[in-house]
Each structure stands twice: as structure tokens, then as C-alpha cells.
Length: 90
Image (tube, rainbow, N blue to C red; front, side, top):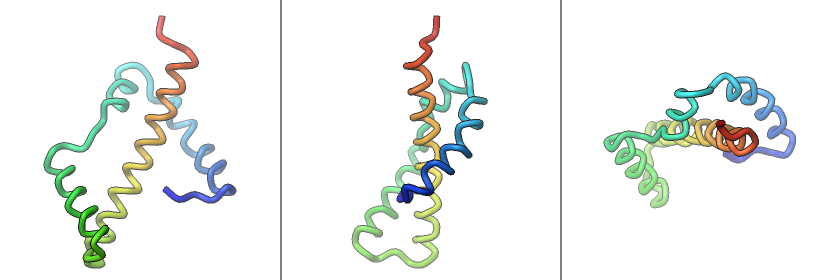
């Protein structure tokens, strides 16, 4: 996700309240969240086509959706890992 220095603080302000809501089992599930095998294969296929410059407009839109969602999840996972380091479970 290519964010400008002015966009980062706003995104953090949007995601921080959401990330604080995910605790316990939900947090563990978030940290283990991965695409299933079929979806990952599709993402890999689109990534290869993107690298080759052969994506159709519809494929580009699909791939960009996966990338944006993946970045969103990665940010929430990073916040969860940081929270775990700052206040380890007792």
C-alpha cells in the first residue's frame, strides 16, 4: 500500500479503534489468517500476469482488490503483534 506521509496518520486513526476490538480468540485467528489454497493460487496467477504486463482491466481490478485487502489485513496483524509485545498474556 503506497501511502503518502499525510495519509499514514489518517489510516492509523481509522484502523486503531478496529484493531483494539479484536482480542482473545479473534486476535489469534487474525494473526493466523491466510488465503486458502485456491485463492492463493489465483492471487499468484494474477501477480505473475501483472509482472508480465498481461492483466486485462478486469483482472487488474480483481488483483488490486486482493492487494488492498491483503494490506489491510497485514496492518491489523502488525497492530495485533505490537499489542502482544507491549502487553504479553499472563
